[in-house]
Each structure stands twice: as C-alpha cells, then as structure tokens.
Image 1 (cartoon, helix red, strand yellow):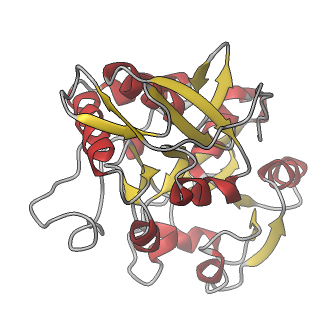
Image 2 (cartoon, rainbow, N blue to C red):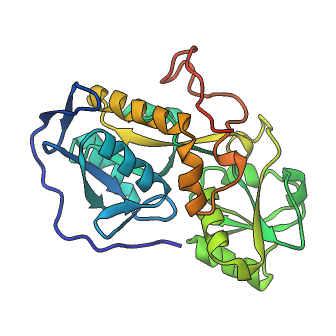
Length: 288
C-alpha cells in the first residue's frame, strides 16, 4: 500500500523570499518565490505525485490551496521520518501525508486546521460486523509496529496481538485466516479496501469513545505542518481550507479515494486543540 514516485531533481535550500498573492493581498514567505515546496512520503491515499501534480486526498487539497494562493507546487519526496525535520529547518514550506494532530507536534510546528477527521477502526472480513473494543476480546489481532495505540490494544482481555512491519503483511494474514482483524491506519485501510473489493473485507470505525482508550477510540484530525515562523502562510492556507469545508469540497475529493463515510467529515467527540493551539472560541469545521 506504499506508493513510491520518482522525482527529478532535489529540493534546493534557498533564503526565504516574500511573495504577494492575489488571494490574500499579503506577503507570503516561501522557500522560493511563487513556489510552495511540499514535503511528502508518497503514501496513498494521502499523497502522491503524477503527471506534474499532487495526487491523493491531502495532495488534492494542497493543489487547490496552492492554486488559490497563486503558488506553484514543488514536490519534495522523502521518507516520513524526514518530513517534519525538513519543515523545522526551513527546507520546505509545508508537509502533508495523513498526519494526525497531536499536542507534541503543535509544539514544534504550526499545524493547519483539519482537512479531514478519522477514527481508528477494525478491518475485518464481511462475515463479521465488529464495531467496539469488546468485540476484539479473545481475538487474534494484527497491527503495525510503532503505532501509538499498541499499549491500549494490549489491555484488552484475551487479545492476542501480532505486529507487522507493513499494512500489506497484516492484510495478507487476515485474508489467509491467520488473524481475525487488523487495526491499521484508517485512510490506508479504507483506500486499499475500495481498490480491492475481491478481498471481501470491510472497515468499521470504533463506535466507542472511551477515555480509558483515547488513542484507539478518540477522534483524530488530519493536518498539514508548517514552520513556526510561517504565520502568514499558515493563515492563508487555513483560509483556503475553510473555503473548501464551506463548499463541502472535502467529500468530493474523498470519494475518489474511497473515503465516503461520515467519520471522515463530521467531527465526533471532544476538541483536543482548545487551549493548545486554538482558542476556546474556535470550532471544528464539518461537512454533514
């Protein structure tokens, strides 16, 4: 499920220059004049690069934002581990790729308003219809090494946990009947299932909202990351994101990648950003 694209050239390190866009009538500082340099890892359905433009859900949102700001996107394909560091060092303007908001990330980057929501869930065969943590008790469950919610999974009674290096490996074992379910990256799971109906698998988001299992059952926000010094750029990006929510364009983009359920576009649960990187008066956007 990992997509790799070959890019010509490398990102050049340049001094920040001011650009004035018709959309904002305010000077925007970018690495190169008239260019929005984007760090991404090429994992679909979040980001990709094809025929001279960004693809994927995050990629298409960024294409629309950049066009509105009269900026040309310059791709900077790299491993996920390097995307945040490239933003912090000022080598790129923005990073994208189904990155979830966390308080820790908000300390080191300026994070955009959400472009999408998500809840973790259960990838399973069509023979079952599990939606709650209790459904996983005494089951064989697979997930990906390094996922933050693994300690919470281990708390479930009788659950036998198998760790995998990739989502592909976990899904293969699910199809072979060696495990009963997979708890993977929600957009990646949904996208893979939409592209492979012959698998006869489905993804159900958790219906639980249990404070004892916040990482597994809480609401997540997919965001872009920018340098802490890029306040004008962040404001301009957020203004365009707000327009896309108002037009309900997010649903149209998501449909292309199999992301059609309300869970992606209607926030559920508490807003963890209040008092962290957003004021109490700020409300989450939605497209019912």
